[in-house]
Image (cartoon, rainbow over all chains, first blue to last red; front, top):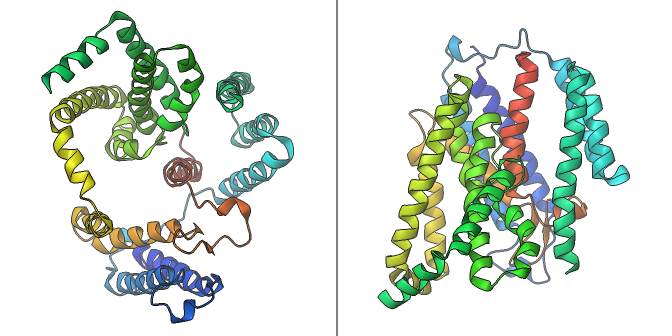
Length: 145
Length: 227
């Protein structure tokens, strides 16, 4: 049997549905909700079941043709991993350093990682600062007004 | 009715208000082009400027900004697959593949013509159909909203390509799963927030669109190593 993208996609969504259904138990209920037909958990439980059934159906009905197989050769996972770690660090740095500094540092690291020529970096700094000023100054006037 | 239409037209065709339309559309298009900024952000940025204007000119300026931002969002959708609002998500389906085939100019021009034609026909239709629509909207109850949502969700399967119905339904369910993140509207219970304050309001549509389209495009480009 050939494992295709549909099989992998179905399997991933099945795992997601199981995890989603598992964590539906953590949703707090109001006193007396155990006697109610519809609670905050009802929709998540229904979605988890529907998701599980649909993903199983996808796994079962997926065709095993070779044209749909997953080919990983030639893909640069190392660089993507570094970039995604950088995005996570940027998200964390936003709280600590603020938008302007975090974005500038993110751009420096991103350009260095992707090997972009340094002359383009200066232009992007201007873009970040300009965007920051456009988004903060008029909005700040509006909020204070 | 005709009196109202002529009064509205005489206000709209005043030179200063026409200038407001041009300025609003230009500013809206410029802001809408920036990935991540949609019509709501654009209108919010324009609010301080409308303080000094009379009410009709201010509303005309904001309408121009809104339309301009919706059109401007199609530019980032077509060129870098980063829609700024819900209405430009569909533009990226055909526009971005066209841009990849070196037909970005054609896609942008088509988006401009379509935006102008759709906006003009829509405004004219609203002009005459507004009273009837108001009656219908007042008769809309919870069951009608529910039926409309069911229609929208089933349309996902109806419009899916041949052999893609299951995947389309799975994506619809995935969308609903993401929509359940945040505070439950009926009971106020937090769902899937995992103790994070940032998730109490749920996942914003803009964030989801950027993650689905723009981030995926970036990751695929880096994965394949093609600029």
